[in-house]
Every structure is written in structure tokens, then in C-alpha cells.
Length: 115
Image (tube, rainbow, N blue to C red; front, side):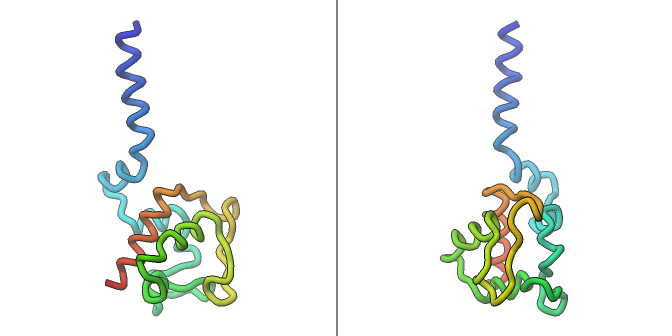
């Protein structure tokens, strides 16, 4: 019994950390992740598509550098204000929960739009 249980447990533990990697390898793009996490409820990719609620992803990429990614990850995770005029990002609970790994992936994707 133990010999069958150990491999199953190890497989389960390995799958726990696979989250976004699994999603990406199975066709989930960063845009799909942004849609799933409800980022696109307020943000659009381009300024021409921008909603009045929040800046576009490209506007964010133009304003911030990759050196500021840790700060932006924190904003994604905790919400906040005073980082873009009067626009305030809602706190978790009001929007879909985002893991640190997902926030890092989303911020990297957004900031690379400027390159």
C-alpha cells in the first residue's frame, strides 16, 4: 500500500507548484491570464481601446521600467492608490485573487510591451 501511495503523493506535490507554468504550456497566454483574473474589466491593451476606469497596459509600460516591477507586482497583489492619478486599483476580494506568480507574470508581460 505504501509503495503506491508515495508516488501518488509526490505527483500531487509536484503539480501544486505547476500553476501558471502548466497553464502557459497548455495554451493560456498572458492575455488570457489577464482576462481570467479580471484585469481587463478595467484595463485594455492599447490606449485607443482604453476604458475610462484604468490606464491601458501599454500606458503602464510606457510609464514604468522593468526596474519597478516589484512595486507593480505589489500593486497588483494589494491594490492601492496614488500610483496613477486618482485611479485606485481595488483590493483583493473586490477583484479576482491573483497569486504572486501570476502577478509577476502579468507585470513582466505588460512591461515588455514597451520594448
